[in-house]
Amino acid sequence: MTSSQQQPHPVANNDQLEQFFAQGGALRMLSATSAEDLAQLASYASQLFAAGDYAAARNIYVLLTTLDHRNHEYLLGLGLCHQRLNAHHDALDCFTRAGVNRVADPRAAFFAGLSLRLLGCESQAHKAFKAAVMTSGQQTEFQEIKESARRMLGNNKEAA
Image (cartoon, rainbow, N blue to C red; front, side, top):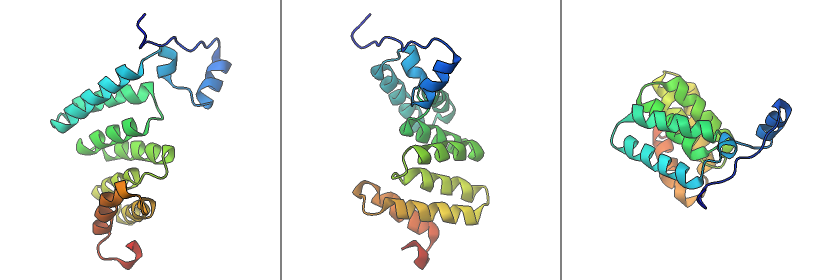
């Protein structure tokens, strides 16, 4: 066994398994999947997405979110794949889960707003874009998202 491989987390019965997941456990821990392996898969999924092969990227992100169901970046990636494949209800599910996992990151709200708008749910999209603006706040890394959300809202004074 190489030094990058981890020992699987032992779980004996259903009650222990339920407790393991309730306490934040993930399948990656049970399967001893290394962080390096996950990073390689995520990199490959990102390359596929950038190349426009959204279905193949989606398949990798499905695997990643199965192994680590709480990883914010994997959920966003899967959601974006669904969005590009016009599976907006699936995208919304991913963005909702990502938003719950990391409330201070406005990307999930923004991307949810895009899918909601494409589904014709304008009032819900408006709320999502407002949430993206508010969540962005003064976080410098999210100012582009904030400005995009403001543009989606139009010149509405509520967006400021």
